[in-house]
Every structure is written in structure tokens, then in C-alpha cells.
Amino acid sequence: MVANDKAPPWEAADRTAQLLKGVLDMCLLAVIARQPSYGYEMIRKLSSHGLTLASEGTIYPVLSRLQRNRLVEGYLVESPEGPARKYYRITKDGKKALAAWTEDWGTLVSGVNKVLEGETSG
Image (tube, rainbow, N blue to C red):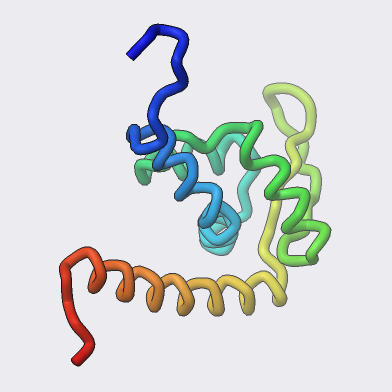
């Protein structure tokens, strides 16, 4: 491969980034459902679970969309270490959405695993 060529799409970082895009909303809602959190804290929590590609540039647009859709609400908390931090908490609609996404995710994972393992349905 020539040094200037783009990495092939099957390389780990690209695969992970594509998969993360599809589930980041659900993962952020799950983190917030456990405990209201601010942005950097969410990045650390996601990273501790192996989702290391989540960054400020990826989560803040998602948090804005979740807030516009009334799945989370933001509020400011004074910080002894600097400016106030914007925390997010899940709303009633957010809890409903997370429950639905969690169910859908279970069905999807089960189906994908069956395909990857070569299971047949009949």
C-alpha cells in the first residue's frame, strides 16, 4: 500500500467507527440513564467499556440531537474547578426510547450472530 492511500475499510478503526455511529445514541442514553453525566465524563465511561473512538466531536452533536428530540435534558452544575458543567439526564421519553432500542439491539445482535455462526432457520 502506498503511504498516501486511504486505509482499507475493513481495518479495525474504520469498522469500529462505523459500528459506533449506529449505536452511539443508545449507548449515551444508557450511560445517562444510570447517572446524569457531563460530556467528558461520558467519554470516559464509554472508553472504559472499550468504545475508545467516542470523542467530544462525536458525542456533542448526538447529545444535541437527543436533547432536541426530548430524550435528554441538559442543566448546569457549578464546578469548583472552573466554569459550570452541562450535565444531561434522561427524560421519560428517553427511558422509553432506550427500552425500545435495547430490545431492537438484542434482536439485531441475535440475528447477526446466527448469520456469522452459519445457523440456518429451518
